[in-house]
Image (tube, rainbow, N blue to C red):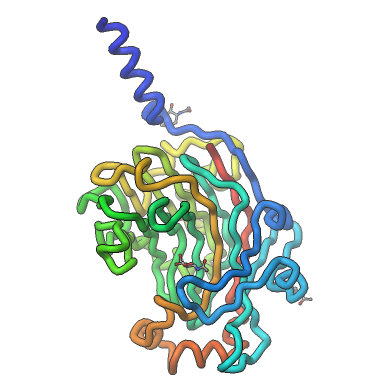
Length: 317
Ligand SMILES: *[C@@H]1O[C@H](CO)[C@@H](O)[C@H](O)[C@H]1NC(C)=O
Ligand SMILES: *[C@@H]1O[C@H](CO)[C@@H](O)[C@H](O)[C@H]1NC(C)=O
Ligand SMILES: *[C@@H]1O[C@H](CO)[C@@H](O)[C@H](O)[C@H]1NC(C)=O
């Protein structure tokens, strides 16, 4: 009786990963490998951005998607002046062909999009939003640092006010209906987590771990002395127990992770203006002048640096 009870407890702790969070690489993407593992989605932006997402053939032909060696570059058009009555600026939205439940992703990113009006994001989303949940890993607008990581869910998911993370929470209710879509965000502690400071440091690594007990998000700048060696080397096996305190920690406490998050696609997108970046208080508040849509229409060269350059993405399960 006692022995079988102990065995059950041991099984339960093994299942929750409590004995050491070790994972094996299931996917590794670099250079033109992204073209096979991600689809270009030529859809209209649900957040009403001044963009025109193009398909893969168009993106390659217009060099909005480019790969060479371990460079995978996706960008917004930076040469075309737009007609106010025509479509938005050409840009790229990629979605992974595979879906993942519990997993770890490590993104090695050299450069992220910058420029007034830009709203780039590296994120994950489930089915039937917000019911399958959304995890934003790298996101911001108008070059305002630092990065903010956010969960978006349906009702019944909130985070404890005090928790083990190095970032600062912007709100603890993850329910989009209760927060006007804001969700529960956490700002990273370092300014080089986003925008031009991220780029001038040579970028860095973003990592996300999702288990049924928690979601954690880490960031290490390129020359940080604390980058774990398995992250830095893109090792085939990793142990997240050695990665230190994440900047964002979302425990399954007043939010059952397994109930609020289903299988997720990984997404990288770059929209311009729209519901967040384009609000005049936000756009002007970031030091950008005029109105966002006219700025995007009339200033193609302002988007010269509106690109991601990704070295690799590794997924562990
Ligand atoms: C992972 O690291 C932790 C902390 O150092 C250690 O206790 C655990 O044994 C490691 N797990 C594996 C599978 O190596
Ligand atoms: C682009 O990313 C933002 C930020 O996560 C998201 O809210 C928006 O829906 C995305 N747009 C598209 C078309 O994917
Ligand atoms: C395409 O884009 C890449 C990456 O930004 C750049 O290095 C290359 O020169 C561009 N090619 C052309 C033909 O413009």
